[in-house]
Image 1 (cartoon, rainbow, N blue to C red):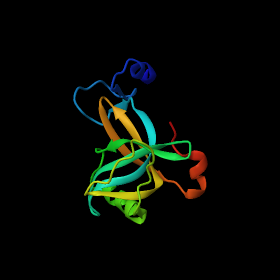
Image 2 (image 1 turned 180 degrees about the vertical axis):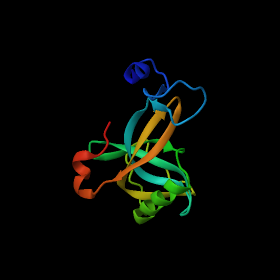
Image 3 (image 1 turned 90 degrees about the vertical axis):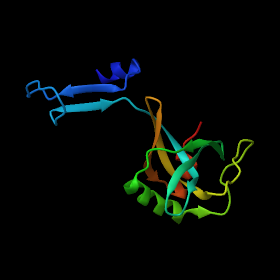
Image 4 (image 1 turned 90 degrees about the horizontal axis):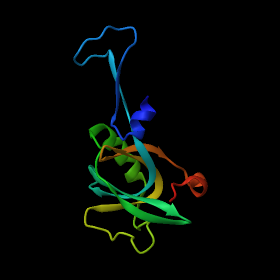
Length: 148
């Protein structure tokens, strides 16, 4: 049923526990399953400060080159920003990891990072959210980087 809802480009479905009677209103008897489409991208930097993430600067690999694909500026809260900032600050680089004609130029509040962190971007009814997926080691970077 969820796959059908997703094929129809619906946000998702709401369902009730089979063994519970129907009662209107919000309760733990109801569950929501959402349709999400996701794509993994490499973090090449972030905008903000050393204590706050405004947006992530994202890219994907084309061959051996990291190509800029845009910025992700939503999905951050106090809890996940703290964990993400620890990893970002641990991988700060003085040089942009992006190559090619559309490589972004550094802005005043941007910080570059080594391209070892990957996030999954999910598109949900027009809203782009970044969720921290995992940190990848340099050892697996060549074979498992997000690619176009």
